[in-house]
Length: 305
Image (cartoon, rainbow, N blue to C red; front, side, top):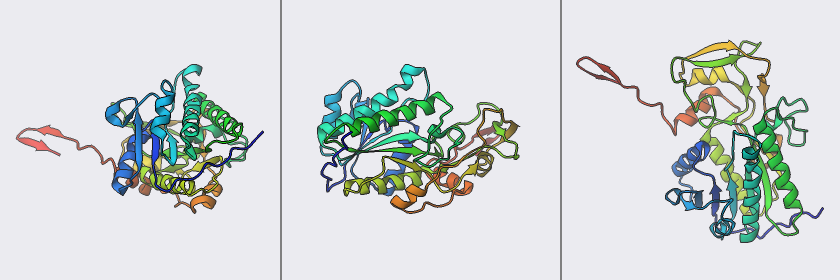
């Protein structure tokens, strides 16, 4: 199988972000705006949100939007649904690679997920054998495989890196949502704590991504698969406590994975070792962008906040 030839790197950063209107995209947009990052171009199906185009239905428009870009970052994806819906993850990845090839974009990053590891019986290093247990994890693994296989089949094409991103505070189901009524329910494992997961705050993630964009723009050879998270794992009950949430425990069913901690050895070699995961710092990272909503309670004679 021929290997992909590295396209000529660009000098001025232009990152086309595909699917930037989702929960994670919204947090990254806030983080990069706070950091004063320039050269970010956001794709959306609605022109009011950026480049208005359908990456699957308008490949020529996708290529035009990518013209002059140094990087395409594909955040777009499907998290739920049947096989046909989840297969769109692979279609979106291939569309990004084809647009990059048509527009001579040297680097493509594809947002994958720690969900590809499943119960991590073979470890959570990028060279291990993933064993996803969810349909979403299997779809993301299929996306990686088809993207890297197609990249390798091209004599001249973009370099592709699949980013297996851990849980992102605020974009996850734990901190990013609230119980409609009453305390939040949380599975508690045999050790008396909630499941432990690799986590990262959106501001820390935005800085990592910026480093990777700069390396790709400079012509560095990046690995085809890269875990993205802080070092170590945090318990979900600690995160709820750090966020001041009211929550109630319930016994974890056998299907719950007690711990999934990504091996970040390769990431440390590429951009330097990240900070160690700490529940208070992770929540502070998220709340620095999205403060707690003000709770207004009507009282006789006035309003208390």
